[in-house]
Length: 308
Ligand code: NAP
Image 1 (spheres, rainbow, N blue to C red):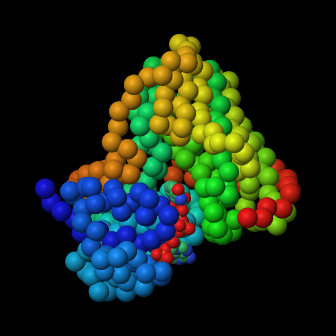
Image 2 (cartoon, protein in one colour):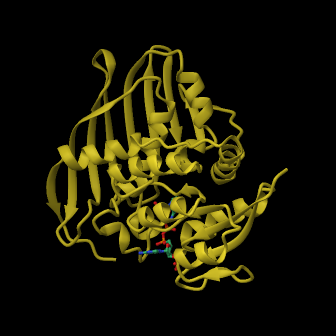
């Protein structure tokens, strides 16, 4: 097997929790360097910024960008221009246009661009998609609710323009639903709740339309007390499917179904290796388009100030 040297850029929560273990466990990759303003990882060569890495290590063919979305476009564009394969954390950009530009730039430069959606690799995602494939869809209900203080402690960027607010986790639900549904939805209405002291929403209620009069609803909330709810319920002509725990578990008419998968981040690195090998890209902006539509069509309400 070819071993590809890879550099990890932005050593924060998700890099430490998921990317480093997934790269270490994947024989197709070797973590050759990091880019980090705060010191990187013990025992791994670190560069202070991406231009320094690109200049010093032309031999590293791939980079994985795990910084917040706003600075990600400039980093991805620079890496592509330098002829490197690029893997993007979700959301793939702070705007839809950025993602479309990166896709074109990667194609023109002949490198792989992989815009990841980790929730699409949740343990039960493939089984849910396969079960729904031949069903008539009657209803869709998404509930994605968590305590922002528990899941994003001290993260300021999620409250800034481009940080997406509650859509930072909720886009995971949208990535999952757009994978498993055999029909396409478009957003028709939204209400976005902005804390009076913040530039991004703390909650959102969305409505979507699908074919044959299908309507879908989503409730996203960061003010959840007493345990997170990451659930998608889909009514069909042959029963009700429920994905719970962010897609890790699947119920059909209340009965838990056996599921087996390697896990979200190991699957993402397997796919990145395949895409590089096949000289292909994988960029699906649809979940981000739904979020952009919510910001475009959404009615805004002001709610109580949020303090950490
Ligand atoms: P984070 O811990 O706040 O930050 C990630 C790292 O990016 C920082 O530690 C910093 O690393 C670097 N960074 C921060 N601001 C930067 C800037 N302006 N310019 C360049 N680098 C910057 O965030 P995170 O939770 O890991 O999230 C990062 C991305 O992963 C987001 O898109 C998020 O949606 C996604 N994600 C997060 C989770 C999660 O559970 N947290 C789960 C799945 C996906 P250095 O100090 O090393 O430079």
